[in-house]
Length: 189
Length: 123
Image 1 (cartoon, rainbow over the protein chains, first blue to last red):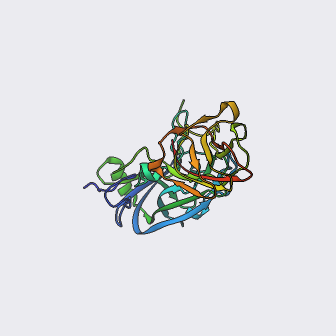
Image 2 (image 1 turned 90 degrees about the vertical axis):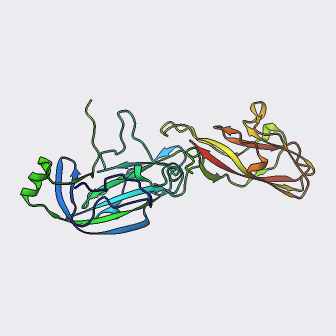
Image 3 (image 1 turned 180 degrees about the vertical axis):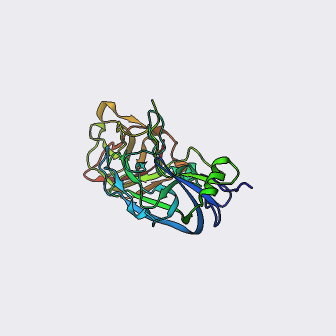
């Protein structure tokens, strides 16, 4: 009964949707668990979703909201991304919560990601409704960059609420559900 | 096949070398040691273009540092007056450095040099 789809999956053919129509998902945003069923979805081809702009040498930009990544109510989106320009870019989701976090380090993504993880599956994140992420750029070049463009791609999913009985079955482990994370999480000391 | 140590290509600006001697070595590619960046970036020279602008036949040094601190990264390159030399990856020892790359000619003979470097940034 298991789905052959899961977050950050990297199969032949690069990116796959995390769920198909009729699949159950639980979108975790902060402390909320949104149990939903996918009723429609579409791909989002690679596009430039944010340009942080010029960043001087040896400086870090402000956190810049990527409002282009918002979707409508009852929807969530699955994105993979990479920077085009020479910067180490950090993802914040929502703006106060870093993603890709270790205890002492927030892991950035730089343009070498396309060599080291061509499927970009390690960059994957999810957006719930209008809870878009923000990005900041660490400019490590000796001369600065004139723009900092981010390319994203993925899928948009339209969902409907699940009946309470189905949610109970998911919690009891008798109904399949794919959990996706749509926010950062600050670890406990 | 996945190359996990492949870097990204970047270019330095076209840099004019108007004066001879290591004391006048000019930066042709600047690296950063920004404390906030993750890890250390190093570079390898993948392509080098040298235009001899009526500077006579002489050597051009490619290295790091300025003056007494200048160190050649590769042996000096001989440049013929009023020609352009193009060195590709196969011509260039793949020396890796995390210092700003500098260059100077042994003589300018009343002319100058224009140098541009293309590097692969690793790290």
